[in-house]
Image (cartoon, rainbow, N blue to C red; front, side, top):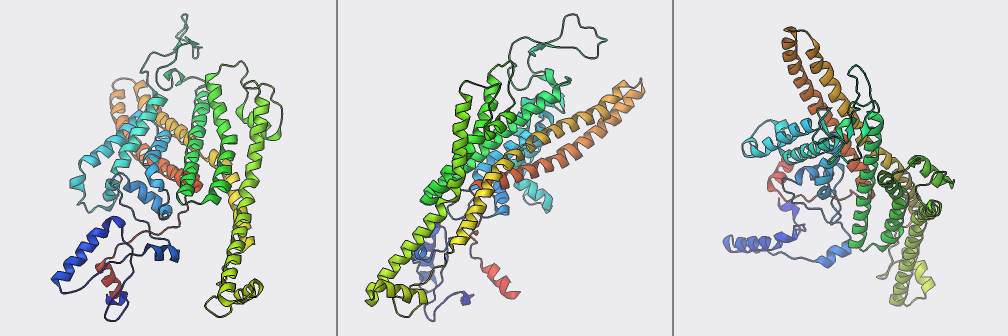
Length: 501
């Protein structure tokens, strides 16, 4: 392996190492010097590293809780050196969004118990030869958290295996003169508020889907815009940490203005309608369309709505050219200034006038003061920024709509659970005695297998993949470059195996 070094009598090798391991490496070199009569030295040159403009590798030391999220992020792309790591946030946001899709007390409890079992038996299972079980073992903490948030969302939906559960007294009461023969009847609201989650009286109501779908759609949009704003906040953090003021003023600020003035305002209207009683509440979609077209709202939400919306729309419109135009012009101006500075240095070193120095540098003339022509194509920068602007502006619309998949999957999960329960198990109770006893026994076994195979198998995988998509595209696209390279420690075994191939 000495061919990886440079030099004749003194061998030198350039390498990356974690800063926290520096003292340990020095101690090892000192020990080797005394034991084998060899001389070793560790030299660091941070200035040379900065001058080379080589991006250092990214090094992670994730624990068992962060490791699954880090794997998912690395599958999409490796974070840049010292860039904000999406895995830290995905530890919480991933199982939370999964829970919104998979919300059910019974199914979430099964998933959480499975994760807890893997956690309790991790020491025994880590020696298993089953590759699939190894993957589940690595994801044990995430599986337990996914089950916990699914259980919590199920309590909020008041759903246990697709059926509403009455944990508290309902705020809806049946009429006193109710005829048991009636197929439908109208409930009256007592004016009280159900203490936690959705009132189970909505389950089985004729307008259940109309109400629950509206609620879950709005919840999906609220959490979606919140997560995208978190991504923009991390974009601010990256710009501040790397002191990239061009990105800070020309991308971060206008992108946030665009997001808040339109989609943040939409979220505010959703919550305002929830807490404000109205006789004729306007449609939020129609309000947003009117806001974009400058139409007058016939049934305003609040006083002065027209003036507020016109101001927000002006800020939204200004933010688009703000993202598109200033950055390429500033980069072009910086490049010209840098080139002029180099030509002045070349003129001073070679005792030439600036025009002759510019001609010499432009032709790649000889001499120690030669200026290396840097590649800078203004057209390419403008096209790149144009694509970035179009992608962000249109992406915020499509990404906000993409979060509606959380509502769609939640609806599908609830309806599948209900259909399986009614058609496979509950239908057996209507059979005559004693046939119903045998039918219930067989139906329960079939129901348990269908629940395990479809709802706890296929549906878990489906919700997992959709949650992964929301993190990779909708969340990480707001700040994540994903063009780094992972730190790979030196392994003599790997080097020897590579040579043998």
